[in-house]
Image 1 (tube, rainbow, N blue to C red):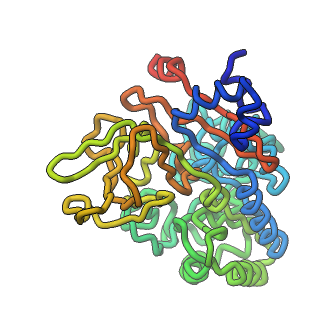
Image 2: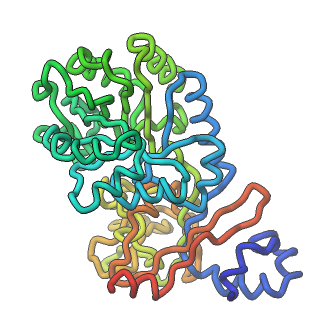
Length: 415
């Protein structure tokens, strides 16, 4: 056991400086690790989101389950289990994480199941959704062999309607590989199909859902009365400030009144981790070329914040104002405007620009806000760049280091 194994369990760590000085262990540890980047998850904020989600579930009778594709920090699952009972998976490893670490079988969907892993996936699943009728027909005999332990079977449907503007995240774009179209379904569904799964939202509003249901029922309403469940997928950002929670509840209750036979399921990811923590980085150099100042950090956008480049979007930085990149190229006299650059060799590993109220210095900390959902699960070790620590700020003020990444993590990944 070493310094870093113990640091998160000392009550003085990251407490006020007066307490820190009284603990030699913490004083040494403070300077030893504060120069490392880290994600900091705040338990109080997480519980606030969980409480709201649980409240909506109780008011509507719908079940909300955690989507691992957005949040899979399994050491926090004991907190989640106080509020929800199930999770959703899209691969063998996610299904295994649900079964072994969350403690319940997963609601599983995959664009295509594979022959050599299907039995394992099914064994870890309570609900299993097929993307196509051909996959359903191919694997149905394998499910029959499982007898009473087989998961409830569903089909993913495509309502051919979505209000997602970024095509990269639009599962209902023309020619999409996701889901079965209404004109592809037989008048009588196979008896084994007990549910439908529809996903066509991304950080969307209650109004988006209400409009989507109109299109969904138009195309698939004739099959809904004979099903047992309807999974409305993810992208319901009910924990965002300004979200119309009352409309969500009204919409879900109306759906249940129209189809009392259906168990309604929603599987948001971002809503659970929304605004629950930050990514902290440090400035390691400041370079200025042709009038453009770039603060190079010990984190990477492509490795640690890939959605910023994929979406794309410019994250919020505490104490700085986002400005047009043109201001970085032509800063006014007395302005402290910087691009923020990552530490990988990818040319496009930078974002810009932000105005600070002071000149940035080497060693200074930069905090990227709201960096818990869709970050840890999408990080890479491109260039062998070390992943940031994952830390938990507990309700009592203690900080626990949930994970510290090392050279061995990179080496073993490349084995």
